[in-house]
Amino acid sequence: MARDILPLGVSDGKERPRLRAVGIGGAGCNTIASCPFDSVSLCSARDSCAPHPYHRRVVLDDDSVRMVRSMSPRLLSSMDNRAVRAVKEALGDSDILFLFTGLGGETGSHLTPGIAHFARRQSELVVVSAAMPFSVEGPCRRDTAEKALPGIIQAAHATITYPNDGLLKLTPNLPLRRAFRVMDTIMLFPAMELAQVLTRADLNTLRGDLSGVDNFRLGIGEGGGMNGEVQAVTEAFTSPWFDQPLEKVVLAIIVVIGSEIDQYTLKAVLDRIVPRVPNAKIRYAGRTDPEAGDRVRLMLLLGFAP
Ligand SMILES: Nc1nc2c(ncn2[C@@H]2O[C@H](COP(=O)(O)OP(=O)(O)OP(=O)(O)O)[C@@H](O)[C@H]2O)c(=O)[nH]1
Ligand SMILES: [Mg+2]
Image (cartoon, rainbow, N blue to C red; front, top):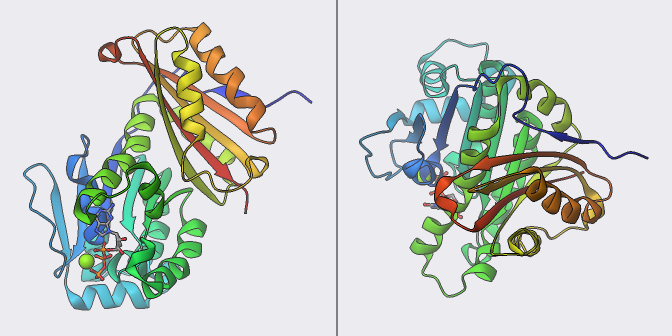
């Protein structure tokens, strides 16, 4: 059977979607701190997010947190009160909403499902990036995170999960604070790449493709010289977050970044990815980065079936 392999970002009208990143709770707000496009922190009064000159901050008082938390997501989007107005303000009316959250605490875990549901009314594509707590944070946090996740997956068009423990395999021995900063950079990467390649016309197609996916995991690869593409693909597949059989992958979203991305480079990458995910639809794009030199970078999002 012919594989379903399509490029992104090549539709006739190359109109770019309007984007916004919203950080929810302490972790979410920290994650968006270096986001280069429109971004808003949505946090509780207790969250100690560093003030940032370029980001707006919408603070939910304790009553609003309680209200958003206690209402069914469906009801939430049909109400008009202080809490709902604050959420609306934070979400705005962009075409793509990237929501960032760390699960395991109160704010992110309890608010993100309802906010993602709300976001779907405001935006054509809602992508949630969720960090899952380190094992050392204890079973309670893990439990809270695992309870919150299904509601998020159901509400968002796409959910990318990042078990923090995966970071220990990439950079062992990092102090927690530094580990969180590394995690923030990793979690921003797919949003920044998708922001640069997707056109408005892609959103409709992608929404259909995303419907069979439970959650996405990220692989990042880089290589240089003659076999740069091969190295980049090999490295991306060593991702600590690809911890399920690759036969379960139903959608792969690929962005290849380099100073000269031609058909040869794209083919070299696809030839090495497509056979490894035999049941997946493939959506791919190339992006030129003049500063890449002789390096090829790869963003590989694998969408696993439930
Ligand atoms: N990537 C990243 N993850 C973080 C950061 N801080 C905490 N986390 C993770 O996110 C989880 C939730 O923590 P917070 O975001 O601080 O919690 P919260 O959602 O604000 O909830 P409460 O503070 O309990 O109301 C933690 O268990 C950590 O695993 C951060 O700065 N960056
Ligand atoms: Mg907090």
